[in-house]
Image (cartoon, rainbow, N blue to C red; front, side, top):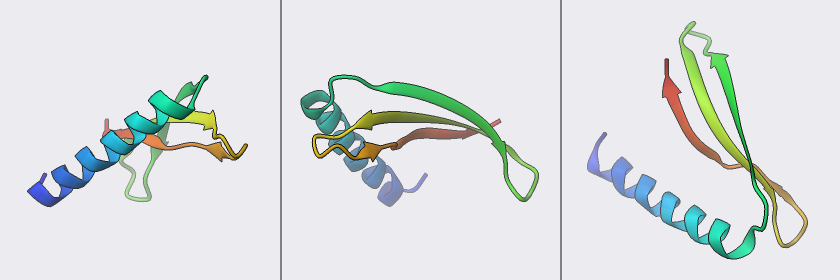
Length: 66
């Protein structure tokens, strides 16, 4: 992964960690296995929570190639 992508990933991780630590009382973690149009399998991890303004948030925590 190039340095620009690594930097972006670190920034997004920091922002999400701060938001989850300060604003979220309960969180659900889900997984999903899916296939791309190129027939490659992926596993995704998603966090789901209700934000302070009562909107549903579902950031993808990670997606890995199987």
